[in-house]
Length: 225
Image (cartoon, rainbow, N blue to C red; front, top):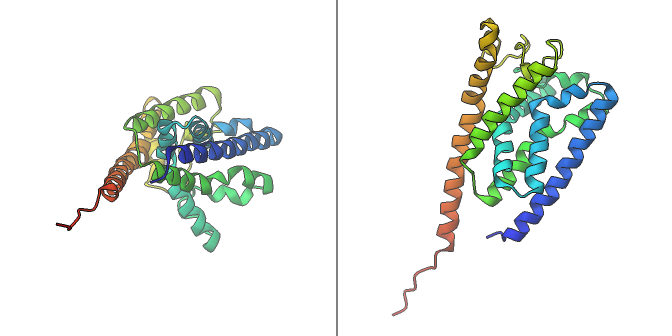
């Protein structure tokens, strides 16, 4: 059984590293003249993960994991396929072809954030039920901020439209919705496809891990008379 002090120490160390990478991404985006890209949900999730680890908050870490569990899994699969075949089947990671070294370094959390958060989750064996609600709420706020502060040309978090290049679950069909229903449709799809399945799966895994841990701690019955 891993001691709570060791878990807390590992969490804070990870938090420092994640915070450092988020600050690095901020510098790169400001230098490139694209600070508005920091409002992408992936960057928000990186910052949330850093705060959660630094504060040793299981709720914030679980929320960050819920945010990226499905979305980053799909990104990694798309990136792996694109890197090996030259074709990005989902269109999620094709933009990496246009990044310079600094841009790639700022975006590399798409590859490592999910495994690191899942490692912390595996160690702690807990998944707060509120994480799903917090993920859904955070996504609404980020989408509304993207719509209010940025332009259709920037289209951060696809707050205005789904590009045709995004070949995933027929997402571009959401563009046919009336403007006032578009954000609601995107939110509904992301919840049903990403957040809710992640929350159900992680909750199930956490319960199984706790049961296995409790079983391993039970004393072995003695056969001595």
